[in-house]
Amino acid sequence: MKKSELLFNVFLVPLDFLSIVLASITVYSLRFYNPIVESYPVLYDLTFQSYFQLSLIASLFVVVIYAIEGLYSMKVTRGPLKEVIKIFSATSAALMIFVLAAFVDKYLFSSRFILIGGWVLIIIFVSLERFLIRRLQRHLAKVKGIGTHRVLITGKNDISDQIMKFLKVRPQTPYKVIARVEHISKEGLEKYKNRIDEILECDPEMPIEEVNILANFCEINRIEFKYVPNLFAARATNIEIRTLAGFPVVEIKRTPLDGWGRVIKRISDILVSVLVLILFSPFFIVIAIIIKLDSEGPVFVKLKRVSQGKIIMMMKFRSMVKDAKKMKKLLMKYNERKDGPLFKMANDPRITKFGKFLRKTRLDEFPQLFNVLKGEMSLVGPRPHEPEEIEEYKHHHKKVLTIKSGITGMAQVSGSSNLSFEDEVGLDTYYIENWSLLLDFIILARTFLILLKGDKNAC
Image (tube, rainbow, N blue to C red; front, side):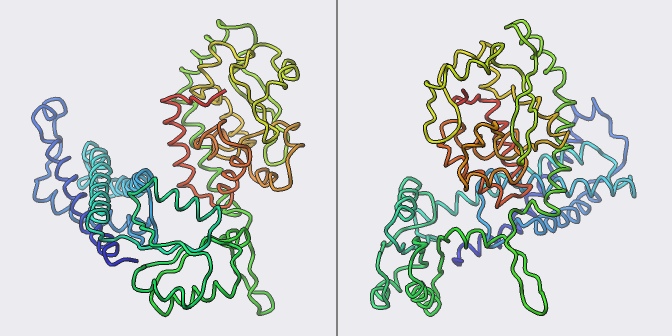
């Protein structure tokens, strides 16, 4: 890690603390602001001095929660959205503990306004503070070269081409490519040892002898060594080591959803589904009435789909005309998806007028919450496909059948129907092998944004 990156990460601790304290003082000032006091009289006596002392202790506690949640990890690089979600999660955890403390001593936490307001302002202040720090970090890297990673890329193949292209269109990244080489030798590397900070090996098929040359060169010259793994090495990142008869045995786990991950995901599915159904049930009634007025047929349709290798009846708001299934065979010649078993057709004549709106906003998917409650589906997962489509899967496609299908997923928030089938399977495979509760929340947040803006790729 670059020295500047280390310093920026270390400085985040006191800056977060100051942001939390500032948020606490701000919410206290708002609580005693005359217009608010006139509407909601203060029914407790808490001087600013006592409150300030309490806020210092509470702010320190929140920073400890941030540390436990990994917000000061030196090895983690997050995008702005992931960082805000992480801050939201950690601050919410701290709020829950404060709420529990209120039952012990009501004097200390007697104001719901301060608790809720402080929670909101802390998320805003810390997120803004970190955003400004990251902007400063990128500015220094771009203008002064401080924190820039000077990289030597090895291998001339599709992987290195895509990485070079990515770095070219995103100059704000901290990486600066010094050179790209194809053949590795000790003599050839020597001329770069004072010009680079790290080597990125992009050829998964590179001979082991050349890989050893790179690794040894980096170790001797204190240069970071990174590489793009082959398929087996990538799978081996999700491992569990046990002993058997005194020997270490490595188990390559299929997905983090094995074990406790599966339990946590199921609990979150139930809680979120129940909450959404309660909050939006009046809105769903309105949708049902419009569907009945718009065209002939039922409000809901039950479609035969495959989830985790089992056939289920997936529920949706009806967005097509009556007997649309029977019309599909006649329309197959217009199928625009030639790369896989899926069907896609622009201006599909089976879709009703209101159905186009439902699909664009993805509101037609909401009844699947009942499938989630029944345990047939999950909120996030691979797209559920028809049995006939599953029959056309190649061997590597069947990886997506190892977990429950989802209402939304990585493919749906990464291009939807514009993705090739192989890209869709690739994204779903990545999700299966790298699942986390945070990843689920990010996908759900992106889905919500698509719902608000509308999905122009919906068909």
